[in-house]
Image (cartoon, rainbow, N blue to C red; front, top):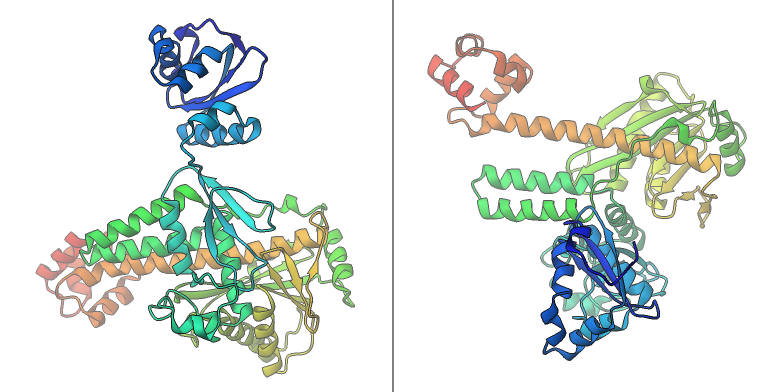
Length: 483
């Protein structure tokens, strides 16, 4: 609303919001925020305000001819709205009275050979990607955590080299993957950046799971200060970035049957036959823990959930998505060969050239018949094809891309759900580790007999003692008490 300067406190809601002052020419001269609009505006329009010692503030109050307010839901919204309006109007009294503080933006310049995460207060037209502004949470601490979590460089050199490596402590304490020393390839480094950008865009589920796991482990070990540190970081991640919900709805495929998308995908890829049966793979691991993979199947552009498969990673014991992709593709299609099935029309792997080359290597090693295969990189939705140095970038509205995204997102969802299931099961089973007198062998006896902690909870102490050899009634009662 826009009112002439006749202030009545009863007209102002006691809500957070933003207020704008205008002069007699209608120009915006000041933009402010308030946790309580009525209380804040009442302070401006007291009679004693006209005799203020601060000449700048006195000049502002004498120049107000009209005002308007914009109530919002919470203080965070008022911070963001105030920042946007100040940039839009550039009011002269905000310049005179400002404290030179703006909200942090997170910046990544993808034009750098090895991009790094930076903080900025101004969004420039420099070709970099900016995320934010972030009005709450410890953005600096969170940015530092994400840099270390993904092993990105912090050095300021344009292109780090061996000399930078010799003077760097980050690689020695394993905070940096050290691209300057060849410990990671350019492609491998960019995969890390791509995953980080997913978090910045809101897909923070894996990082949240990792932080929650660290917090629970520290708490179980009575390291309460460490647990509190991970708890605060978890809160920051959730407050600053939130979680991006990746639920795929079939309406996003722009046709009633999915057939149009399948035909368009055949045209886009230039393959001989329609990809009526698509199989897609995704890897899910947090710091190498509970590494799993998913395979989802789409027939005629629709999910065929009966054909979905999930895998525990058996052969790879370090963080290496490429090796994991090699293992899973090799295991799946080796089985298909042994069963005499070669019914797949198209294979999709989640990732860029690295994941694509790993899948190709696996197929070649088992002498699987040639078939179309591609990698879909999330960063710019680039489609990588074998033997082509440059990716294909499809129009955002094209049915072929919608289908690829749907398949990829479903593979991601299925992998994450399996990862979460294993992690929650492990956390539940770890309750037994805290009971004195229960070692690994006895724990396995209990789980093999009852199947799960949930079933164990339903049993009486007498039933536990009866069914598990070597467990007396006293220990059985202690187990019931702990679980």
